[in-house]
Structures are given as structure tokens and as C-alpha cells.
Image (cartoon, rainbow, N blue to C red; front, side):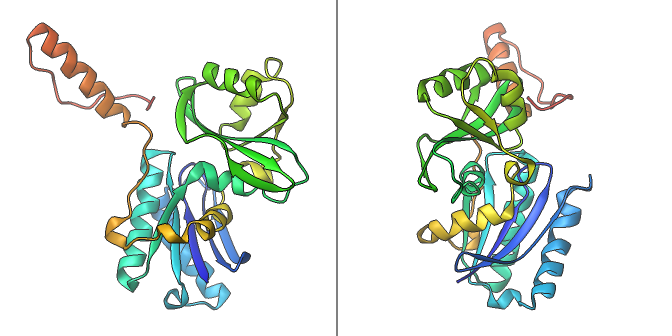
Length: 251
């Protein structure tokens, strides 16, 4: 089975073509350009270099979240478009599970903590057991404060392998408080389409038509959360809230 995977949930964007557990081709970019500018040309060039037509792909996969709301939407939209045009099945996988997949086969026994920076001292995170080189899920994907993650990692009482774009934040904040923290090297730390392809191969039974593929959000976007908060305040005061979205960094 040939799987075309896309990862655009954070700063870097990447794509990979895998067949029966082997990566046939991959490409990535972290140039500052938006994913909407780089993703489809990158996929097209990778397939051409691999000598594979999109018609030969059996399954399209995407990191469907959690992650940057814009990045996740772009990745899901790209896969939906490719799948719809070719009438191909597609599957959305957890960004966190895809990152943990990259630890599969490592000579490490302990817990893999996949973490993404959700800002405001929160992380998107999930824990995975790694024993004998095999990775299995321990906890669901969640958005939690760093203080809560600290408690969970301490209770593991095992070595912790940190992966994800939030790994450095977790290491800097929790090192000295949580014993056994190991910061993954950069080549294994960040989101990669190869991990998406590996996770998709485990979830082929979840494949759906393009129109049913949906992003996975663990919380509402900042604008909607703040709008709802203002609506609640307006109801308490008996006044109508403004519908304008706030400016500033998403949190």
C-alpha cells in the first residue's frame, strides 16, 4: 500500500511517500513561507522525483491535529482536495501519535511524552509507553497546563523521552523537577510526515472519503473563546457583546 502523508501542524511542513513501512521519498520546508504556498508544490515535486503518480497512491494521510489552527486547516484541506479529485480514501491521525511513532525501534524503555506548545504555559500532549522498541498509547491527546504535565510525568517514575515542538519548553521548565527527562535530538524531535505515514499504516481501518475528513481541535480558537467569554459577561450585565475578534497572539 502506498501512503502519501502530509504534516503541516506547526512551523515546518513536510510530505512523505511510504510503501509497506518503507519511506520511498520525503520533502520538507521551514522557510517562513506559509504552508499554503509550499505544501502542494512540495508534494508535486516529491511525487515527480519518486516517479510515482498521485493515481498510484492508495491512501492519503494528514496530521489532523492538535496543532496550529491555521496549519492543521491547510493540511486537512490539501488532503481533502487531493483525495476528492482522485476519489481516494484519506485518514487523519493524531499529530502527537505521529511524533511518538518516530521513537518506534529506539533502544529506549520508558515513556515518550509528545508535546506541542499551546502557549500560555499550556501544552498539547499525550504519553506513550516505549518498551522493547515498541510504542503504545498511555493517555489521550489533551491540552493541559505545564504544572499538570509535571505531576503526570513524576507519577510515571520512568525515564521520559520528550518529542515535539514543545519538547524544549518542557525540558527547560521541568528539568530539575521531573527526574529522568531526555530531550530528543532535533532529527527525532519535530513533527515529520514520515511519522504521519507510519501512524496512518496502523489506522487504515479509519479511512474515510474526502468529505468526511475533519481536523482535530482540542480547544476552540482564541477568537471564539474570547467571544464566548465576552458574551457571558454581556449576559451578566444585560448588554450585547461586540462580535469583533480580538487582536494579539493566540493563547
